[in-house]
Every structure is written in structure tokens, then in C-alpha cells.
Image (cartoon, rainbow, N blue to C red; front, side, top):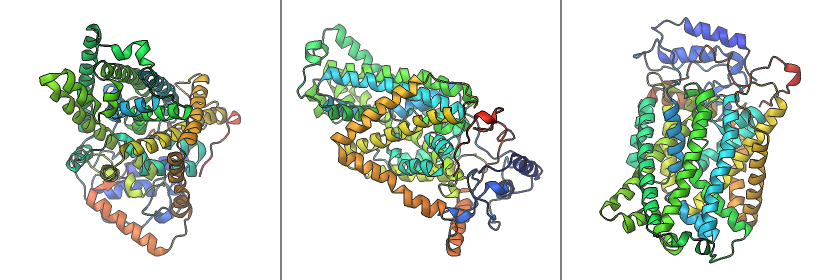
Length: 542
């Protein structure tokens, strides 16, 4: 249950009275310890110390631990900063999507579609369905303005177990959708350092490399139009475009869309950083409305351009479609395509680190991950422990050999989570009809998305029961972890001591503390009681 508002205000007042001589760790401990009913025992979750969770159970705070001394800016509030404007919000969405598979997925979509025309239709349909889902996420994002995206919404609406299972699957496999695997550990380490040092640096890098990717894809599209004007569009004529070399079943179509959806994955990543957006109630929906149509246009016409230079057989035989395209048409300037692939990788990993670290941060704040991950640097105000975890995840992704099997796992679990989240929108409409919603989509939008979602999942199970079964098993393995790590509170004292020692060591190593709440945190927080409580049904809490 959430702590009383009065208790939180009193805690913040006490924290505000702490003078500048108090070191960063002590200030963080004062703030969170004063929340009383809103904290959980350190060892309620394996690897935890005192947890600033709004859903945890009351318990005593651990003994004070030594921490880093005061530094520059110690008198300022230690919290995540709102430094993401509209342009950076758009580049986060575009950069994460384009970095997720445009150089891989054209092959998978075509392979399962059986014809050029049907493959292009899958790309357009993928953009349309993504637009429906993003509109639903825009409503959820402004109604529940919390970082963490799907996880935050599912936890708020369905309770702790459902949220933990979504978080668990994300930690294990969904992070692979953040960008194509790279074989340069140095790149991941470098970008982790940048993201740890400054939010502004990270967003500027995202802006620059997203612009570079769009320029590279614009070059492909421009060359494709030149090819069409010169009459090189044999594969795009109706007779050839729908000349099937195989008859696709409904299951094949479902798999084609799963492959295409991998290239669109990342469209919901801006919802992971809602609390760092400048004016999120305006900029979140604006960024979504700008970015999704733009990416759909770029993807569709990029594939059209590919087919002006390559036959379906050549495209299927290519391991890097954009590079093959450049070698055939750009001549001396063919080096641009490998560079664009590198830009896509660079920007994709940067976007993944920036957004997914906030997912881990949000999970730790709710008490579902080790509390060290809910801490931020006392000067840079960046979630360094969460960033290090995400950097380690990219290293694991590098070890995966079969990329297409990975894409199937990721796409299936992604779509399962998307559907559950959008179903939550309907549940929230029913339970909290009076909740303030700056954006309220027509009910046909989530219903249409869920109908398509159900179709896709059913036929994916029929055509690829092994892949889908493994995806479900991955999610369900989180059930015992939840009951052992989160639900079971009376752990042995040795576990308490171990986790507290590890957290203290992590704090001293990373120079991190719990963030301090903003003065308006409780008054403007998500899902506050409505002026018409008799019409609302309370949300489930864990």
C-alpha cells in the first residue's frame, strides 16, 4: 500500500531541513527512512537493502552505512532531471526502432510472406498496428506518468505479480530488442560511461546518430526512386510482386509479422523515461504521433528501394541487405552502407542503455529488483547501477548465435506484453472512470489492437509451438522467483546481512543514493484518488 500523503510531506520537510554539511548518502537515507510505511525490509527481495517502494511492506531500516561524502551540488535535490525535450523524445523512439532490425528483418519478412507484394503489405500493416498500440501507450503514459513503461502500467493496474513477470521476461530476453548484437564490448562500455556521466550527453548522442541513420535511409530511398524513374521496377509490377514462390499459410503470415515487428520494436521505449521528459503530458503523445508515421514511411520505402536493385532470391541470400544494395548501386560510395549499419548499431545500443536502465530503476523502486538499482549518482543524477546491469545484458546478447530464433522469442514475448498492457488500458477505464486523462483514445483503438494481437498469438502457437512455448516458459519461470524473492519476507538473517553488505559496497563503489522525491510527487502522482471516489473501483495492490 502507498504511504500516507501527510507522512511523505513530513518526510520531505525533514529532508529539506538537512543542511549542506550532510553527505549524500545520509540525505538519501533520511528521506527514504522517513517514509515509514512506504518502505520494505532490505532483504524482502534478494539483493535488497532499504527499498523506496510504494508497494512494499513496512519494516525497519537497516543500520546506517558509510557512504561518499558531499560533492559539488550536494545542496541540490538528488533526483532524475527533466532534460528530454520534444526533439530528443522523437530521436529516442526513432533511434530505438531503426536500430532494432531494418538491416536484418527484410529477409525474415520476405521468407515467410512468399512474395514481394505481400512482404510490403506486412510492413505497412506492421506500421499501422504499431500506431494503434502507440496511441494506447500515449493515453497510459499521461494517465500514469511514471517511468518504466509497460512494467509500471501493468504493476499499477494488475498488481505486483503481473508486473514482476513482465519485468522478469524483459530482464531475460526483451532487452535483446534494444539493438542488433554488436561484436565490440568496448562500444557498450563507452556508451555506458557516457550514459552514466550525463543525461544531456546521452540524448545528444542519440540525436546525432538518429539523424545519421535517417540520412542513410534517405539515401537508400532516394536511389530507389531514381531506379523507379529509370524503369527498374520489374519486381514491383503487380504480376511479379504477387508471384508466390510458396503458398503462405496463416501461420506463415503470423511469423512474417513477428519478424517485421522486430524491426518496429522499441516504439514504446519513450514510456520508460516519462519522468525525465519535459512536460510529458504534451511531449509524450507529440513524439509518438511524429515518430511512428515517419518510421513506417521510411521502412516501407526502404524495402521498395531494395526491390528495385535486388530480386527476392538475392535479398534472401544476403546477410546484410543494405550493404548488398550499396555494392550494386552506389559504386565508389558503397562504403556509406557499412557506416550506416555501424551508426544504427551505435545509436541502437545507446538508446537501449538509456531507456532499459530506467526499466531496471523502476523495477527496483517498486521492490522487484535489488534496491541498489533504484539509486542514482549524487552529482550526475544517473542510475549507474542499472546502467551497468544493462551493459552486462548486451554482453550476453553478443553470445547468441542464432539471431533469427532470438528475434522470434523477442517478438513473441514483446507482443504478449504489449497486449497485456493494452488490455490494462480497458481495465483502468473500467476501474477508474474519473481518472484525469489528457488523452483518451476511442475504445475501437485498443479493441482493434487486441483483436489483431489475439490472432497473431494464436496462429504463432499453431505454426511455431516450440518457440512460443519456450517464450511462455521464460515468463513463468519468474513465478517462483517472485515468491522467493519478493513475497517471502522472513528470510534468514544471514541473507539480510549479505544483501545489506553487497548494497553498501555497491553504493560506495558507484557513489549512489536513493533519489529524493519532488515536492509535487504525491500531489501530482499517478492514479491519485479522484474527486468522485464513489464511481471508482480501487486498483489492485501487491
